[in-house]
Length: 276
Image (cartoon, rainbow, N blue to C red; front, side, top):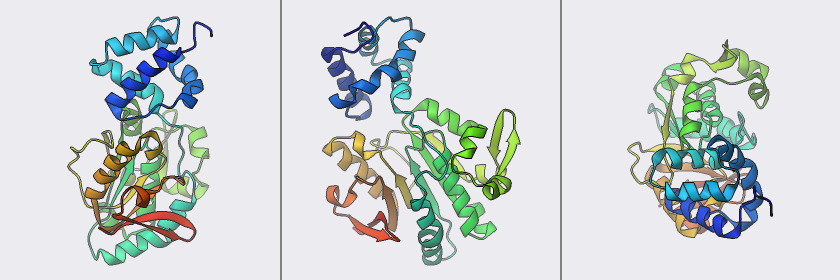
């Protein structure tokens, strides 16, 4: 073990910290990935090794700046526009048209939970613009939330590089919904006015918006233990409109954890309906 590795004792200390502060379960098999994520922070704060870094973090665990720094280092996920395209294809062709008809003239509300740096929320706003008449799209809303303050800050900045644009944005979508800006591209004003971002842990019950017609919470539940999964699904359920849709990651079975969700397959894509 080198001075840069994390010893078992300090791994357990970090795991305890993450569970207490964010409900995140850090599994031993993930310890190999911690070095690349935490070493830059250790260098920034002047520590030679991860054990010293974790000692400082646990000692300062009630300091919001320290908590945010660790969560930012460990939870900001690599993402892209229209990531794993099949759910977005189903939303465009089946789910959003169906909901638009059922809801009459009411606006639609979509929630991107764990939105990271905003690409998923922007993708949802584009779908609403493509599916709904202009006046109804103007009244509709996408809410993006994430536990990472840095991720939300970057999402609000809404500036995307050429490389980020190449990952998922077709030439047609780029022409219609993005404009060149300093050092990259920004979504158009008609998209940005539809999106609201907020720093929030999905386990937090204090979240005022409700009646979401669609919730995307993909590859998030895998970070929680069974109790955390049930709390997250309960918070989602209470904020969904009747017969709304929940999209999770491929291995995340909402129905198994909460019988108020009913599993469905729409054009081969797994999703869950609020039924209870």
